[in-house]
Length: 149
Image (cartoon, rainbow, N blue to C red; front, top):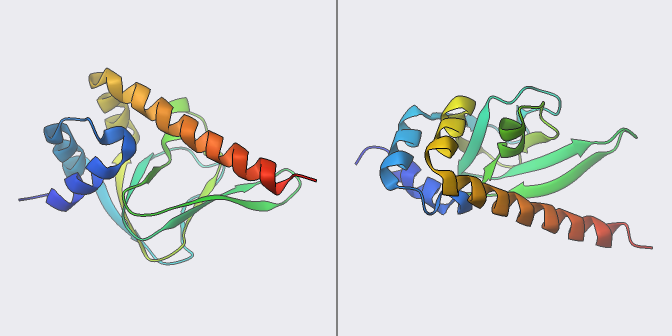
């Protein structure tokens, strides 16, 4: 079956779990498979959003460059996770840099295709908000313990 691996990976992404498999197959079809070498940048802070990335294999690290010049690692994601949603939904420049922590294979879902799916599947918007809220809570907890006296 064509795109079976991609659809199974998309189903592992928390906010895609309840999306009709036929819609996920369409995303897999229109999505672009990309491969990055370890240490290669997927996108950089300040760049315009081009899409949402779903990890098919490997790991990615997400960094933020602070005004003070610090290069802070925020999180590391592995297979079945997604990244890049925030700037796609906000329409603003990327607030982080994504770097392949290992050899990385991703499915890039173009910005317009992702937004169209959110419009077609209203419960997806709530699932995305829930996932991003959980990530924010995790980062707040991490940084509050990191910066405790």
